[in-house]
Length: 373
Figure (tube, rainbow, N blue to C red):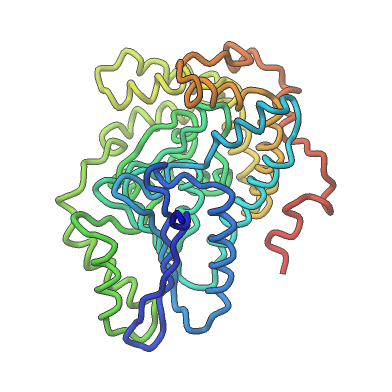
């Protein structure tokens, strides 16, 4: 019998309580999130939330390469391929339950520590961004690379990307660029950065620490680990190129932003150049969706952002762009997606508007009860 895709355990604390530990356990798949994992996590987190013996929860990923490198989009592709041009029940179910889990973490009544080593992408950032204590390491590589597959930065991106300073959320969404631990701390995506530290070391220190309240213990241990890591972390790329990024993202239209970023194609700086290539080679539909979702998200609550994103995700499944992007990147791996439109400024406004018009009323939306007491 193969091991479960999520492992659950508890660690005894000196105050008599326990720490709940959930570990994503598909290291060969970089802990990519599938529906079974979502359901297992949701059930256990709900149980721990109701258990007075559990003081806090830690979420980590097995292996050294990734906390969670995204959602299992290959399975979604197979469903979309079987019934093209339809909003599929399996796709709706996956995104509905994934967003419910993400919302649970954002609103959890106890501290949640996410140990974000290695790759944290897409669905992994959905788990990571809602934690009360977001930890990155010297190996961390965060990204919202949905533009490469014709999706959009979902899992609450409409909300948390808008919380980042200086339009950095727009930058991450449009370019899919990978950022490191120093970048994440700089723009507010992470709370603590540690180096040369395993999660076992963190758990051992917390288990042996003296504290009156769990929040005090977590801050004590994580601050100690953070303080000895400053000179061991990679330098921040965002700090180095902040003027160029801010200048590009401050443009008043998407067309102007794309034009400014496209200038980086001539740059000798590999990081900027890679960001520009991802944008210009990525889905033009995604470019428009990122711009629109972030504009709309500024006016919405977290729950309403998830409700909007579920409409968008289901529309992406039926529109064809998402399926084609996954095919080119992960199925045939030819790197040559045939996008629906050659450029974002050629896309009809009514086509983009259709991504925000669901088939549900306010009352029968699958996430209607999200955030309702």
